[in-house]
Image (cartoon, rainbow, N blue to C red; front, side):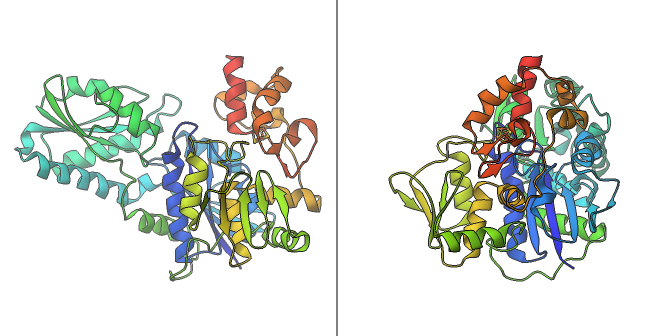
Amino acid sequence: MTTALVLAGHGSHISPLTAGLVWQQVDQLRAMGVADEVTAAFWKEFPSFATVLNTLAADEVTIVPLFTAQGFFTRNVIPAEMKLTGTGTQRDGRTIRYARTLGEHPFLQEVVRRRVEDTLKVIDASSKNVGVALIGHGTKRNPQSRAATEAQAQHLRDLHLAGQVVAVYLDDTPSIPDMYELLNTPRIIAVPNFLALGSHTTIDVPEAIGLEAGQMIGDVNGRMVYYTDPVGVDESLTAAILELVTQVGANLYPPKAGTMWDAFPTAGRDELLCAVHEQGEIRFGQLILTPSEVRVEGEFERTITTLDDLRDYVRTSPKFRPLSTSNDLPSGWRVLISESEMIHAVVETVYPGAVADWVAQRNGSFTVQTLNEVAKRQQGMFHQLEDFERTAEIVQRVCAGCARQPTWFNGHQGVIPCSEACNLWMSAALEIEE
Ligand code: SF4
């Protein structure tokens, strides 16, 4: 019996930090050796919710939604994309467990309390004169999305840490600027009830508060505002994830001292390593794989030695690349290979999920979903793409810059086939549809 963990997050087309928090946790869990395979899955990036299970060979998979609350994504989107039937799904001889969200674990309550207590020490004023604005995302599509932030706010009120506590929302009412009407204290602690330092917490929320990006303390219309880190940026996050995994009934191995090169998804790994050793050199997208190094073309500039450096470099140089297979990898780097499995780990880090598609094509098990099939299972706006009439035009515009072949559209397979329209593609299509 082999086990796998999937940390499911939102991802972003704007900021590398949103998925970055999830990948940090993946790296940590891989090094702890608690499961045979550990990976991430995202709504906006690769590997996608819909395809990540193809990358794993384990008989038992546990999915942990890294969201602050049960809401639209955890109740609607993830189950629809991953074809889950509840907390336990049996499919193709595999058990898939779906854990609760972080918002249902005491971890978040503890971090929120600590954020307020730590800031009160800095403020050094009577807590009666301090108000707390707990800032949630909220969405009008699902009233449940705000329930967790409201529950956190009530928990803070019960602790009597501050004179007043309100819950406000980025995408719902009361809005973030409403906190200045709702609170009458001269000092306000603003706690973003978000997990990551992504575009919402570094750009959208500070702007709505009236702070500059990066400003943590400021005078806004005569009120001192103290903006804290989001609640997911905390060392105890890994422990909370592991508890959620065991609570849903999954068995984990005792932690050991491994490295972040361990516990990668294994679908296609052995075949890829075999091909590299047999052929001496193969091209995989923009990567050149040999038994001694993985590199991209271009004048040699640097050797990268760690996987977190590699991920950071290929995702953000010279700017954020939300589509991992876009044809604009930074050039002139290499990773030296001392153990064969490292070749696969590098490919999986640069192109998450692509090895599974490569091997499925080679062994004849690769399947595609038409745009209509993908649109039909959508829970939100992408549903409008059913019977979309300008598919060829968007393929020309978006897929032309991608190392994958849009197999779902033209039947061509290439080295890395693409089984269905990705989130970036559908976002581009929706823009012209609206
Ligand atoms: S839909 Fe197009 S752009 Fe998106 S991953 Fe597939 S081939 Fe690449």
